Amino acid sequence: MTTYEAIHTKVSMYHQEHLVDFYHELDEHEQQALLKQIDQLDLSSIPSMTAKGEQTNTSITALPSQSALELADQEKAQLYNRGVSLLSEGKVAVVLLAGGQGTRLGHVGPKGTVTMDDTPETSLFALQAKQIQAQQREANVQIPWYIMTSPINDKDTRTFFADNHYFGLKKEQVTFFIQDVSPAITPEGKIILADKGQIFQAPNGNGGVFTSMKKAGILKEMKANGIEWIFFNNIDNALVQVADPLFIGYADRDGADISTKSVKKVTPSEKVGVLGQRDGKPAVIEYSELTEEERHHPLLQDANIGIHLFKLDFLYRTADASLPYHLAHKKIPSIATDGTKINPVEPNGYKLELFYFDVFPLASSMTIFQVDRENEFLPVKNKTGQDSLEEARARFSS
Image (cartoon, rainbow, N blue to C red; front, side, top):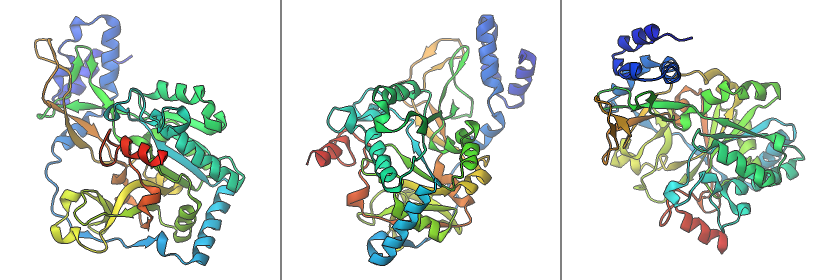
């Protein structure tokens, strides 16, 4: 059992003593719960989060891409068949990031349960399940599908799949796992208490997927089952081609640790992250990091759309890598020093989030496969307007 004395020593070492300010006001059960929460925190990483500061000057260079639209018919057929063969041999698994809620879309529940026409069969989850079914028929194989949920939506996601009979897939081929959480901090770097005996914690961002996969035993399971490639994507692209054989064949032929799909930027000034190199290493480069000249560079036009193929061996090597935290300024319910509750009307702290693409610089090589935006990329991020549910529903109803 974790003792108060041991925890007090730990928090004192990292100047987080306020976490136990109300300890003696709690009952025994609440005390143990608080001590357990603190014991599980990596307090050594907190100073580095607050010291992250401004992005230092870096060298931005291009990472040339291969356009799928420019492939000769024969080469395209060869790559497609190569991908089908890898699927048939059971060497490909799919990982879906689905930890978010549909709040911004005016929807109550997991984002994956948002529908195109108010029926579960047109939900974002169902659309991806249908893609998997199509590839299974083509390759005559059962493709394992791993879905990362969050503590917020895990139960509802599992229920949705069960109620809809896994959208025609086998129950045993769908595995759910929950992403980890991280604390929030004040501008001074103090961890925020949500209540006297409860640290405020929220899902730790999509970059937590790798350690969560390892903790859940998924990487080990994949290796035992002969998986070589992991198709990796987000829930919010209504046109994603899950386990696309052409992409798989391209990635396998080139043999890079990571292969990623892109779409060409609509205009050089489109505010999207682009795929390239930072200081000679593969990276997603944010719009704000690019100079005006770089934004117009003909080889820096590949927008990141969150669709990747990772070599399993690469993720095995990097699953324990320490990725940098990014600070998201948010309104965070907290407790004042006198024990009263605070429900802020303005952002008062920072959630700590990991981004999966921060693993890119660890790759020895990465290739980019540019595809047609019209047929493969329809993000559902807003309720109306550009990149919206309204836009997606109009596309599916036409």
